[in-house]
Amino acid sequence: MTQESERAYIITGKQLDRLEKYGLNPDVELFVATIRSCPLVKTDGCLYWQTPENRDSPFCQLLEKSIEEHDAQIARARAAPSAWTFTIKPIREIITRYVGDGIGWADPFAGNNSPAEFTNDQHPDRRATSHMDAEEFCKALSGPLNGVIFDPPYSYRQVSEHYKSIGMKARSIDTSANYYNRVMNAICDKVRPGGYAISCGWNSNAFGPNRGFAIVEILLVAHGQHHNDTIVTVERKVPA
Image (cartoon, rainbow, N blue to C red; front, side, top):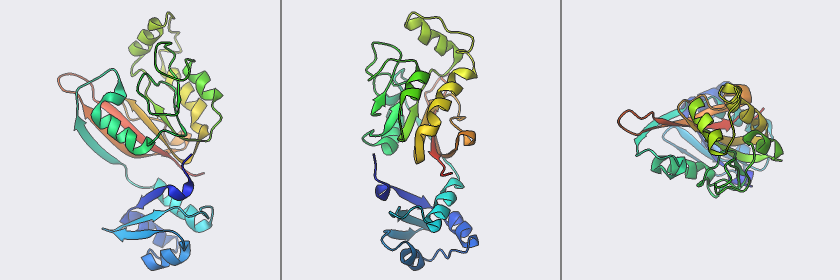
């Protein structure tokens, strides 16, 4: 697992204003004096800081909560489509940026190219560490996790095709929102506060605030012609 002291955050000028409302002066020297051992740089109206060991202090909790309120970044890229999501260059790049070496990450729909440590794909021919039903895989994970990659079939038709490819017939609850919800519900509480969920699909609904997540950034990947964009939604688990 990544050590808390190694995780870095960016706080925008707008968030610094919010901290002032909490009675905290966003002057760099005062921040240094307060956090003491925390490396700190203020550039272009943003405060760059590294989580100190005493992150449970009231001061650090206020900083954590300020991150929850930041505005999500939206970017757009172009790339050829592929059935193997993680081979698409801009998607591979954003996942690599968050997942790193994959330690402490889980992927219940892993396919062949997932960087996660714990991988699952119901199809027995896929390069995954287990081949279980996605919900059961998530329930079996112990946690806490650094993050989850969520790249399921993108439509009910694709869900049906998935089951057909492994010699099964999709049930009515599989070709409905229940298919996605039951997997997300089984894993959302196992992601540690400050961890991430990276969801791929044709919408940006992702895990959402009801499961304790706040959007960090969204990547739209256009594939040309009449292809749907692939939408990558990065969310951060908000500290309770």
